[in-house]
Amino acid sequence: MSDVRKLGGRVVYENAWMTVREDEIERPDGSRGIYGVVDKPDFVVVLPFENGGFHLVEEYRYPVERRSWNFPQGSLPGRRAGDPEELARRELAEETGLRAATLTRLGRLDAAHGMSGQRYAVFVATDLTPGEHARELEEQDMRQQWFAETDVRRMIREGVITDDSSIAAYALYMLTADETFAPPTRGNS
Image 1 (cartoon, rainbow, N blue to C red):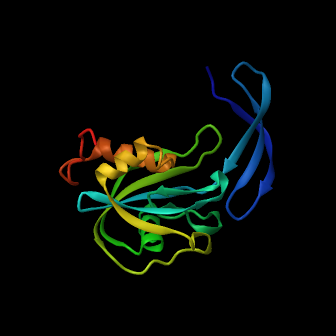
Image 2: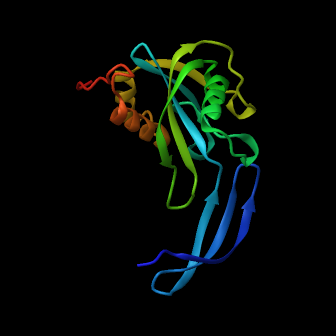
């Protein structure tokens, strides 16, 4: 069976952060239809790890109308592409003020492959040094806090952390943790 083929398309909405397209497609059986696609730049998720726990950030998220805890993450302004490691260092410093002597890339994941080609790289930041944050205007209500890994796991289980990128990044960390990082806590906490 062959892939879906794009016949044409048009931009239906565009701003500084995204483009929304409507593509005309042909399915493998020859039938035609449309497919809506959200184009956004790739981003990074950074897991700042020290002392058996992680630094998280919390801010108000307009689309879900509530404050939310997650790992530091972001993309370059103006829908630009950039080096993922440089972006990880930038986002970590911008949101938390932390600087990492060591960044370990864990992998790359699809953000929402049913509607977007956006991907994200996941990094663990270690050997952290505190400094001043440089948050963007939209992040002015952001706060940060260190949590023991057992607390992060509990927050995920109890629905306190619901950001899918953060949860997927943590799962990737759990799958790849070895002697490079402190062994993850695997108890019933």
